[in-house]
Image (cartoon, rainbow, N blue to C red; front, side):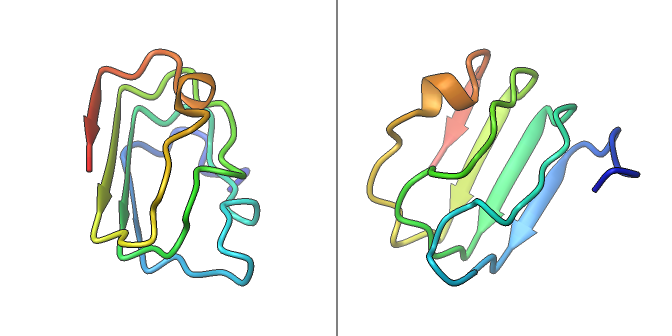
Length: 82
């Protein structure tokens, strides 16, 4: 992702790594909009701090159980869609 520093927005489809965390997903800090579709994570564990993130969306992420840590991950979030 090093060469994608200006990538925005990002739509992630069917991200289903072993362990069901976001640890292996490397996201550019410049993201303003991030969308997850059909992912299997239960928590937001492993997501880095994305201080520029304005919008976060989760679609068909049926295993998602908690949004604990959201304020730390996206302190400037303006729109959340689940």
